[in-house]
Image (tube, rainbow, N blue to C red; front, side):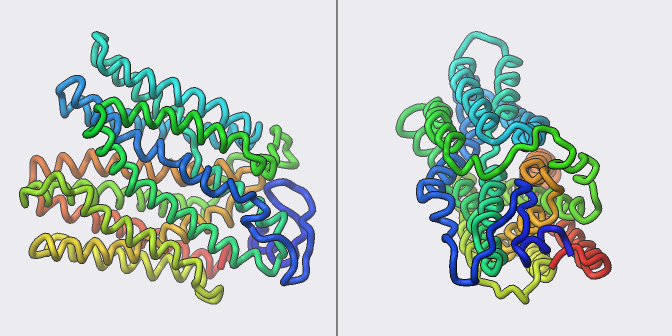
Length: 430
């Protein structure tokens, strides 16, 4: 049984803060919305949008300003590389010095780099300057999803009655995953509208303004005080090596597999739609999976507690594998959309379960770091799969590219199988 599971049962101590957790009768105590503050959820949701707009926005801007699709794709990849390199450092800094200071500094830096990109793209500077600007955009990306999850987990364990913690944690992870899906479905749509109606630079400038207003508001929100910084004190923070413990590492591999799944599905779908003469509609097709995933992610919060996390991961990852096995054989656009809907049913609950397990297995004082590493794993998987599958689709063919999501789903299911066996033998989670 994990420390977190023990804390949920007896309400004795919050591992994120080290403070005593008040024990309430089952029906007493505040709701999560009241404890976090009603303004928290809309602020945290809108603060996610800048990152969902960055990659596509930068691609649109550079292709328009520089007239090179190749440079635009490379620029987008640099955004992902910057995120992969620096996101874990941002999470570790938040654990050490607190979210408020770190998110405020990173948010202001992100605003500056986005505005700089809007200028550099149209400037006479060489292409390498564009790539450096993109790398800095990725490096300064505010890690709102993992920070939001970390705050809510801390609030649940500190302020809610022990009898309601398990169910509330499950529903909270479901909401957080659905919020991610919503932003990654509608973020690119907003980019397309702004670019078409205003200018190619408008999405990047808009992302900068959203960052300035809503990421700053997120940094200053009173909920930031719920996550106590460790200050590097050994009694408050576990050693870094505990991030590489087998039980947590297995879940992080699952997160990487989900990123591979995202990237391979989007890129192979784009190749499929292009062959069918509807390349510009690939984002809408992808949205079918995203909307279904968001709906079933929210539905995961209604699962009974006896439906264990390890069982959920195994079942829904298996559903992802079944869906991806159909992709190379779909007869047409209608069949593709039907399979994408099926994939969304498996993806949403899997994403919720993976982040729930990351929360449960985060080492003491390393919650933000673990959440950020998981989110970064998704980004790295998505970027690398997009680059590789794009090359396969262009040089080998769509029929071969459509097998890539199957391999990605196999990674997710393989991690789920390892997790099932470890959980059964080591009692590391439900």
